[in-house]
Image 1 (spheres, rainbow, N blue to C red):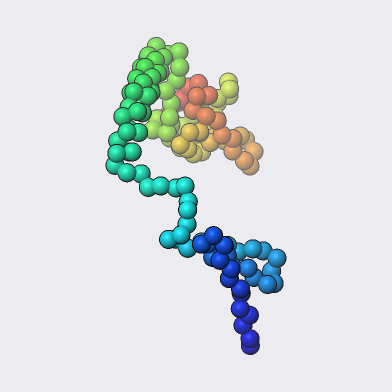
Image 2: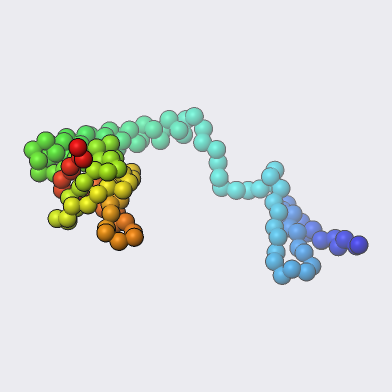
Length: 135
């Protein structure tokens, strides 16, 4: 069994490997001679970015707090439902799009319900209009 040698050519301090049989070109760069534009972030750069972004982060936190309060007020007043995975359990009956269905599975963002056929349907918790627990 003979092994073919693959010629290596140096171009601008980069070693380029050129195989003779597949038509692909394989390029290998020495780590020491690579002139990449990627730089490690220094502590000063990280601090400068944190200082520059702090007002934006504070604004987003304020917006989240505001909308969480709006949502809590909607749930409290009854204009929105607050169902989620912690309140809906397997075996519960839920009203979705005007129809009562049995819960098969409570997923992270949706609830899976029976259909009367061999498959199940899923609906987001926002579509759950009422919940009844079996007694």
